[in-house]
Length: 154
Image 1 (cartoon, rainbow, N blue to C red):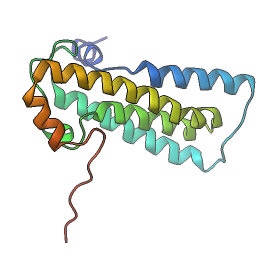
Image 2 (cartoon, rainbow, N blue to C red):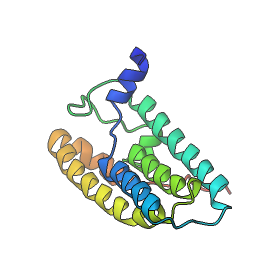
Image 3 (cartoon, rainbow, N blue to C red):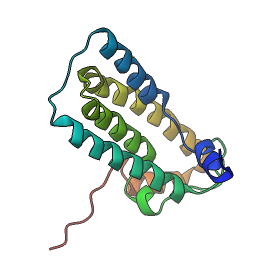
Image 4 (cartoon, rainbow, N blue to C red):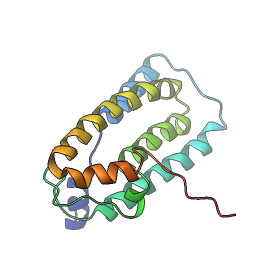
């Protein structure tokens, strides 16, 4: 693995809640296949692509540094629209994979996976509050947990 790819991999939070749900749904699909309609395949791949693009952009924007010991809050770009763009991207990947693989079990697992991921986000928020104090409070007040649409241009 190249140095840049290895560094990016080391600085990407891989949510076990999402990955575990994907793996479990794939196993259940093998044992008890239930298929989504064929039209979900191309739509699903587009959502996977969008989710991966979001994760990659958020990782690049975050830059180098430890996920366990961040030196500063990233509050610009995607992180200025969502406090959790990587997690949002991974959830999009899971939803897209459900369509791309036409796996009903994966689709059905999305709400539980999202709820488990949300619990992790809440724990992470408490940790960030303890680490960054009023700086995090201001960020939290200004930026939604998951997404803020762009202002409409009238």
